[in-house]
Length: 428
Image (cartoon, rainbow, N blue to C red; front, side, top):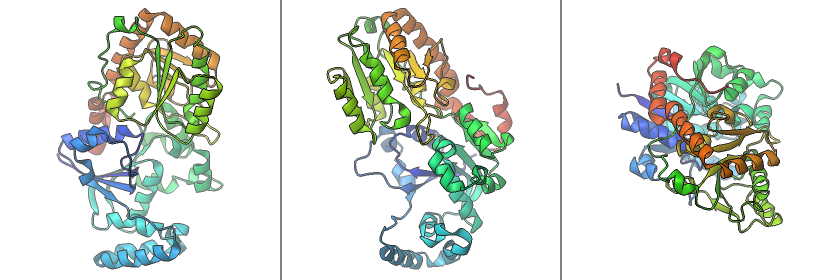
C-alpha cells in the first residue's frame, strides 16, 4: 500500500540530521508519496550529501515563506500571501486570532507557518520530527488543515533542553505536550533515556514506542584490514558538533595525556559548531596543533574515509548547563558498524546504543583520565580492538540497520504496532 506522508521537520537539509535523509530514502524506495515540510531553508553553503541528489529530495520539499524581521515588511508580505492564497482564506484567517493563539498569531508566525499547508491538506500519515513541529501540526489541525495519522518523534532537546521547556511551559512542564497527547497516539523515542524524559513531560507509557534512528550498515562497513591498522600510527576519531554537550574539550584533554606515550598520535574531529573558537584555544593551550585536526562539517562519504583511517572512536558527551545531553548518538552506532572500538561517557542514552565491555568502554562524564586510560589500553591491544570491532558490527547490524528500522516504522504507519512487541530493546 502506497501512502501519502507529510514529513514535518525544522530544517532541510539539517547539518547533522543525516538519519532523516536515510529514513526518507527508504520511504522513496517503497514508492510512497512524501512531502517534506521544512520551516527553515538551508544556508548557501550546506553539506551536499550525495543521497539528496540521488533521490532528488529538493523536489519534494515545501519551505515556509521567509518571515521579515521588520514588522511593516512582515505585514505587507502577509497581505500579499493572503491575496495569493485567497481561495483558502478560510484556513488563514483563523491564524490571526491572537485571542486564542496569543503571540503565535499576533506576530504572524502562525500565519506564515500555515502557508505551505493550505493546498496540501490530506495525508495518510503526518510524521513530525521534534516536539515543536508536532505542536504546530496540532494548531494546523485545529483550523482544519493537515488531516492524517499523527506521529511524533522525540530526538533530544525537545525533552531535555531546560530553556526550551521552561519557556514553553511556564510553571508546568507537563503542560507543554498536554494537548498533543489528546490528538497524537504514537510517540517514538530513540533511547530509554528519551523515554524517561518523555514520561516526565506527561506522555503516557502506552503511547511511547522505542524506535532509534539508524544507518546503512552496508555503507558503513570497514574496508581497512585489522592487521594493517595495528602497524600504522595511532588515529583517534570523534564525529560531533562543536557544542557543549558533545564534550569535545574533555576528549581533547584526555588525548593530550597520550601524546608522550604515542608521539605520532593523530586526533581527528569532524564537525562544526558555535564553540569552534573555544576548541581552537584549547588545542593551542595544550600545544596540540601537530596532533589534533579539526575538519569541520563533512558529507557522509567523507566521514566514511575518516572512520576507515581510525583505530578508536571517542565520544565524551556531557550534560550541558542548559540541560542538553546526547539522547542516542548515532555516531556511536556508525563507529560500531565500521568495527571501531569505543570510548564513550555515561551521558544520556549513549551507553544504551553499544555493548559496555564488549564493543567499547563507558567512562564517567568529564573524566579525562579515564578517557586517556581506556584509549591507551585499546591502542596497546590490537586483538581487543578487533574483538570489540566485530562485536560492535554485529550489534549495529541487528539493532540499528535502516532496513530493520524501516520495517518498524512502516508498522507504525500502517497500524501494525503489534509487530514491534518482539523488536530488540536497547541495552540497559
